[in-house]
Image 1 (spheres, rainbow, N blue to C red):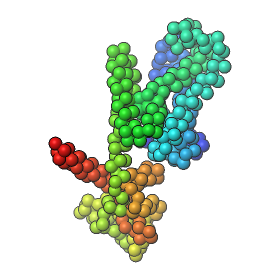
Image 2 (image 1 turned 120 degrees about the horizontal axis):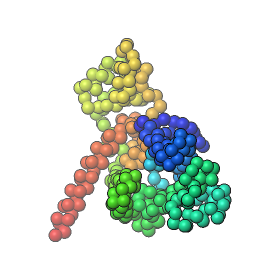
Image 3 (image 1 turned 120 degrees about the vertical axis):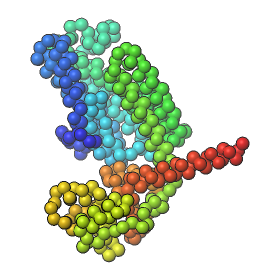
Image 4 (image 1 turned 90 degrees about the vertical axis):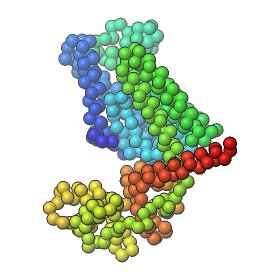
Length: 378
């Protein structure tokens, strides 16, 4: 994710912080500084936010470790002001796996809440039922007691919020997993997404009428997230109908090991092709993209050979792979272009833009076919 930087790595998973994350630290400082009227209160608010997002990180690690247990790679975890995002590279193929992965995050918060419950004592935790809000009277000043009770309440809130059956929250993913066991993923996704968007509208209206604009932002995130998941499911269904061997450019320009960057610039200016295979005979030894050329032009004065800037490590896929699988492979390897092979024979390159174009065309063809069938049925 752009505008983020790495702060740690846990179990081989990079933990990243988005630059906007620091807004939540400012919010904590302002809130508790206002309550106490002291700098110590502001510092206490910052500490609370750091500890809260430590719990959020553990929540996302729960998802990530469960995903890796089923062989699904996790790129990283990014912390944002509204929570954390685990970059799981693909959806599980089996509904039971998605159910376990989705449940793993809230389960971590249940464990944390249980530990904190013991730490603060059952009698104090029972004060949550007094109708006095998250913090009982007397726990509005910086102290270890306040910190523990506040974190207990926060983790319980995280569990309850994430279990709302609104896609793409954890509860929504669990709902889709259960539905998919009997209905299949495409239909289950549509149902779960619709439920998620209805709930999001309700949350948004409640947040607007009550003046809780953070709740409004969350509702917007849920609404568009549900729509995006539906689009992804539909994309996967459409792309599964074509092989990657049907979409590569059969008339692509290739480069030789003796070519220089200036020649690639000429090709970029006179053609629509942005990616080039560098060939040694009939065998590709590297790939050059438009981004590689621009980076070379910004860093080097001399006209470099293409072999100096090409990417020697590139992903290879078989021509009979469905496009949806190739799209997943690109996501797993964080690559926007792959080389297509038929056995040992190199065919050409396919980029994520090529797959998007294929989806647009295939979707149009599918709609036209459905329209003709509907017209014939009248």
